[in-house]
Length: 182
Image (cartoon, one colour):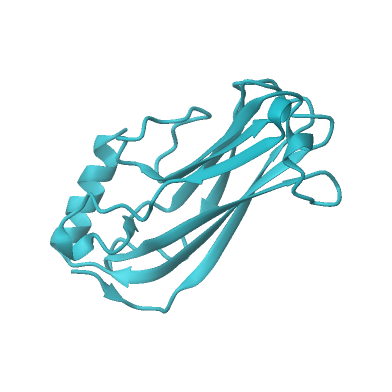
């Protein structure tokens, strides 16, 4: 069972998609968790929620039409294993959260979808949050269906988490599950 060592706090990271980034190209950034994860003491990170914020240009506005040069989507994923600059399928155990910003310029419609995370795939005592025993998170994003427009686009992940202490059995179970995806 996980025992909280801290209250909730936020970690943030931003991926910059440079102007003109081609459809299906991906960019990755990392979130360093080494100050929070400690193997000998069984200390881990419990991710409670992830929010994604999309901004464009030097003014950091949210004009989605300016983010892409046509109809398309900006896809984003947060994982606890390095998948390179590839997106993973939804049943991948390393997937913490994902997001899609759909831009339909022809009909002047923008929609945003995020997954309902944290997940509840683990044992009941661990399912209140996504437990991370790795020392890095990977934020990957990129356009699909259209290129990034004439200005840089920024996708920020705002990760609400807390430090927890896990029992030896729980730590091993999460570590085995985590590395099984690799």
